[in-house]
Image (cartoon, rainbow, N blue to C red; front, side):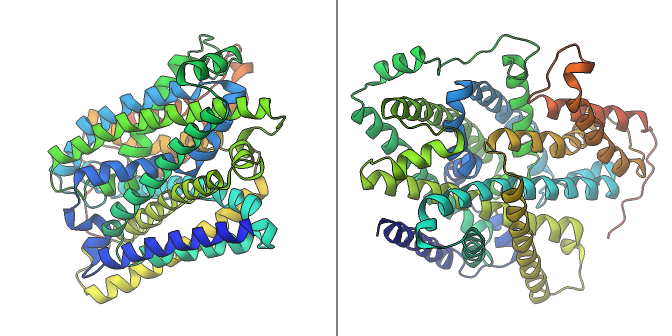
Length: 489
C-alpha cells in the first residue's frame, strides 16, 4: 500500500511540473528553448541552479560518504566556493560581451572552428556521462526502495522517467526549466531540513549535542594534512575550484541558464548568491550524513554508503511522512539534473555541431523539427548510458562522478585557459589529437601514481593535471600567426 501511495506522489509531482511547463512554454520558439529569450530573473535562476548542482548524487551519495571519510567532501565544497567567483568575474563578462547563445562559440572566435567543435564535443561527452550517472543513481534508489515491491523493473522505471522528462522539456526548454528547477530546489531543500530536524528530534539532540556526538565518532574530521593522500586539503580545495570552473563556468547547461538573465550585473548577482547557498546546502547534507550514521548505530542498522539514507527513510520504521519527504526530495533532485542536461545537450548539438544559427536556408519550422529530433535522440542515449552504469555500479558514485569530470572536462578547461590567457594560435590539426591524448596519459598516470610518484596519490586535482598537460601540449604546437580562416559552416 505504501509503495502505491509513494508512486502516486511521484505522478502527482510530475503533473505539477507538466502544468508549469504548459504555462511557461506558451508562445515559445527556438530562442525560448535555447536561452529563455534572455528574460529570466536572476534570483529565480540562482535558486533553481542549486537543484541542478546538487542533484540526486548529492542527495544520496554525500551523506553516505560521512561514515568512511567524515567531512572530507567539505574541502572540495570550499574549492567550489572559490571557483564560483572565477566564473562570475572572468567567464561571465566574456559571455555577455560576445552575446553568446552557446558558450563554445568563444572558442571559434578565438581559436578557430576545430577548437570550437572539439570543445563542444567534449562538453557533450562530459555532460552526457555526468547527467546519466546522476540519473542512474536516483532511478536505482526509486526502483529498489519504492517500485520493487510493485514488481516494476529498473528498465521500465528508467524508460518512464525519461519519457516524463521529455514531455515537459521538449517545447519550452530553458524558459520552462528555470521555473521547474526553482520549484524542485524548494522541495529538495525543504525535504532535507525536515529529515535533519526529525532525526535530531527523534534522538533528542540539539545542534551542539549533534556536533559533539558526531565528533566523538570521528565524523566531523575535515582538513586532511597528509600531502601524499588523495584527500589532502590543498588538493581538495584546488581541485574543487577548478571543478567548479569547468563543470559550471564551461558547462553549457549551467551557463545557458545564467546567460538567459537579461544583463551581466544581474547574472553576477545570481552566481554569487548561488555559491553561498550551495556551501550551506552541502554542509547540511554532510550534517545529515552524520545524523544518519548516528541513527543507524543506535538502531542496529548496518548499511552504509549510497544505501544509507534511503534505507533509513523508507525501511527503518520512521514515520511515513519522513518517507514521503525523502521521496519528494529525491524526485526533486532527479529532474533538475536530467532536464537541464537534456536541454543543454540539445542546444549544444544543434548550435555547435549542426550550425543551426548559421543555416539561413532553415526556416523556424525546420529548426524546431530538427531540435525535437536531436532532443529525442539524446533521451535514447541517456537511456543507454543508464543501463550501462547499472552494469558497472561499484556502490558509491560521488567519487566516480569527480573522476569522470577530471578526465572529460580537462581538455575543455585547457582550451578556454589557452584562449583567455595567451595570444597564440593553436595548430588546428593537432587540437583533437591533443585533447584525446592528454586524458589517456592522465589515466595511465593515475593507475601507477603511487609507484611512479613516490607514494603520492592523485585525487580531485586530476582535472588540474589533465588541463595542465593539455595546455602545455597546445602551447608546444602553437604559433604566433593566424593559421585558420573562420568559415561559416
